[in-house]
Image (cartoon, rainbow, N blue to C red; front, side, top):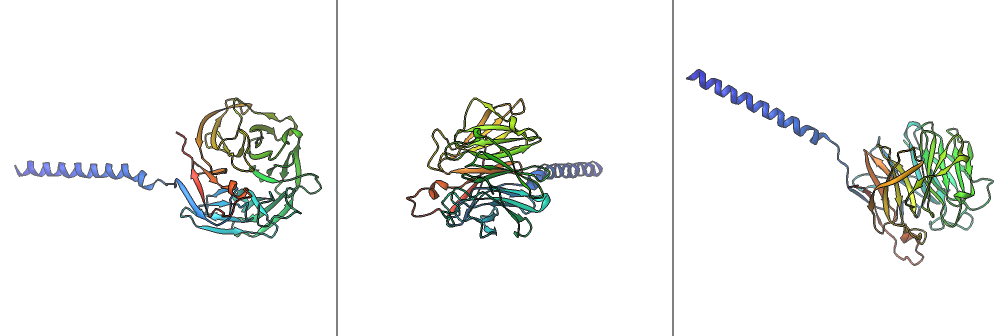
Amino acid sequence: MNKIKMNINLLFLITAVVLLGASSYSNAPEAMSPTTPDVVSFKKAGLYPEGIDWDADRKRFMVTSIGQGLVGTVTDDGTYTVFAQDHRLVSAVGIRIDAARDRVLVCNSDPGASKSSSPETTGILAGLAVFQLSTGNLVKYLNLAEGIEGGHFCNDIALAKDGTAYITDSFSPIIYKVDPNYNVSVLIGNERFGGEGFNLNGIVVKDDYLLVAKFNEGLLFKVPLDKPETFTQVNIKDTFPGADGLLWTSDGSLIVIGNAQIHGGTPGATDKTYKLSSADNWVSAEVVNTVDAGTVAQTTGVVRDGEIYVLYSMLQVLFNPETETHVEEFEIVKQNFN
């Protein structure tokens, strides 16, 4: 009897250990999996951020500023810190981190709404500031539009693997090319990229081509890097007036961030984030999902740990000449495509 009782107790002990181990194993991945916030709110009165990127090594967002010409960092707890500034920065717009080369590239423009705006720079400034990512020190400053007549606005930056930057000009029908040694050239200039108001805006690079958005018409163009003059309009059933930022997702989809709020509103524009896919290498594409944003003037976004985050700039307040009290708090919001 004692032997039978001992065997039963041993069986219970083994079963308990097995169940405890199974329970610990099943809970471990959930406990160890990283979590990302749905919303990151941060305060900096009058900042009006426009560009955003994710500094994965330091676990922080980096944002620019139309209103104050600053480059700052934002952590998940909402702490905003000035990362870099320079007397030449009027409105800091697009931003791109080049972690491999320890640098941050920032577009400098003047839409006439910054505390540093002036008649000498409004509507004609297209500069590129390069800062050291690890220190915030200025590495290089370039005047992209030097010797090119007309209006200019350095807007967004796409960065190739070799460190070459491709940059849109919203006031001239130009895409600039800046090589890793900071030699500036015009990749392509074509009147098809021109028009009233804001024109070329968001830009991304993949393999041997660019995709670029035209804000006022809501179009996408594919630009081959080896023969940019053979660019084509991506065939899409819909147009996206107010198309601003572009970004790739890990599955090869394209995110188009649209806003109808800034620059006095764009006819037909909507405040949505669009997810597009293509089955023919972006000869054509279709919308597969959308997320509504509301009246927030979302400008662009970034992929962080596989999640898509969009920046709510509230620029409609800054560009409203009747504004008396400026926004103090801004948001970076995760996009949940159902």
